[in-house]
Amino acid sequence: MFENLTDRLSRTLKNISGRGRLTEENVKETLREVRMALLEADVALPVVREFVNNVKERAVGQEVAKSLSPGQAFIKIVQSELEKSMGEANEALDLATQPPAVLMMAGLQGAGKTTSVAKLGKLLRTRHKKSVLVVSADVYRPAAIKQLETLAAEVDVEFFPSDVSQKPIDIAKAAIAHAKLKFIDVVIIDTAGRLHVDEAMMDEIKALHAAVKPIETLFVVDAMTGQDAANTAKAFNEALPLTGVILTKVDGDARGGAALSIRHITGKPIKFLGVGEKTDALEPFHPDRIASRILGMGDVLSLIEEVERGVDKEKAMKLASKVKQGGCFDLEDFREQLQQMKNMGGMMNMLEKLPGVGQLPPEALAQIQDGKMTGQMEAIINSMTAKERKNPDLIKGSRKRRIAAGSGTQIQDVNRLLKQFTQMQKMMKKMSAKGGMQKMMRGMRGMMPGGMKFPGR
Image 1 (cartoon, helix red, strand yellow):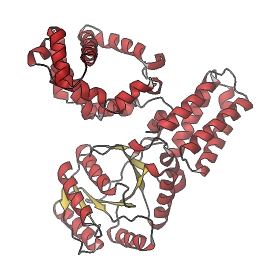
Image 2: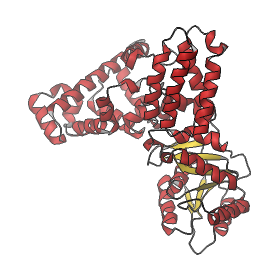
Image 3: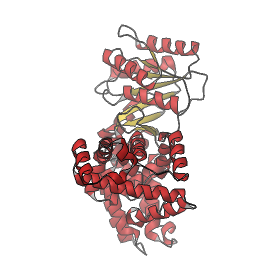
Image 4: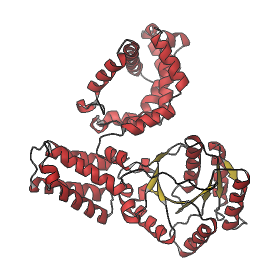
């Protein structure tokens, strides 16, 4: 996500970060590079113009002149303006109404609307403990109704059946009446999409909106369409009173233009990001955290939240107790940790939220990005006998050859895994010792790219 923009901005801002004094000339030169980086990221021209003007105004003013580290102060200004252009703070869904709270989804065909309905339903059920009913008012595509029914079963929310012979308004009203009878908290209505914005489509969706009066009207748009996403959102916003935007396919967008343009062009907040195909791949949009990621500073808060949600606390407590009581951390435990990591979206999903990851060698990043590393390690451990997993010291020459053959890997891959396992084992021992957590954090801090420190330490 935003790899191109992060790479370009990081290189540009690195040149100015160490300056002891900022002149109008070096600020102008840096801003020219920043402008080019934003335009290449497909950020809308009015947004780029305003962003650069705001940074320039603040950078040549007293704010930087009084700073002990002008270069760092300049980067702080860029971060602050990035946040401002994206909306400054996360805007949560408004569900403060007499149940059921009705949410209506709008957008073009192929933007990921139906999938977003299911993802949002799951998020409301699991994180907000709401009962959810989903319904499709897309009477033009029978496949869309069937798709929503399948996804509703997968995410464990209630599905209200509809049929292509019905009218969208009748479907939506019947679903809301059913939700009232069943005391359901939230109803999410999936509407018909088109391949382009047309008058008939807008008239239909306006009539549906007027009939059901949703508390939230969310526009679903594909991030990969860049500034076109912002222009389409603007067209919908002129027809409907949108309350927010869900930006989908962000994981496939290396530019980030849509995220930086939508708020400025529509005046509406991005409320969620679709970050993958899985039904839990929907994240609340936090402008401050995204700005930090764009500038290569990581997003440790989101990482902590993901770990909180993704880690099986019971298993974690068992492992902690085992290590504390002097039990040996073995390859079974190591495999469990790999599986937990997979549940949290994989190693790359976690790594990209850490500061300085962009400084890792490209070949290392490529290996992590294709998921090869975690899958390969799991395959190697699966090829071992239960005895070998409990006693890794048994794994010598002939056993290594057998394990490599069984997992479709090379002996050096088995050696690499055993080396990583030994490092993890040592770390676990340190954690179980008195004051071990502090020692471990100090050790990990030294391992961070560029000698970066963990936030708050």
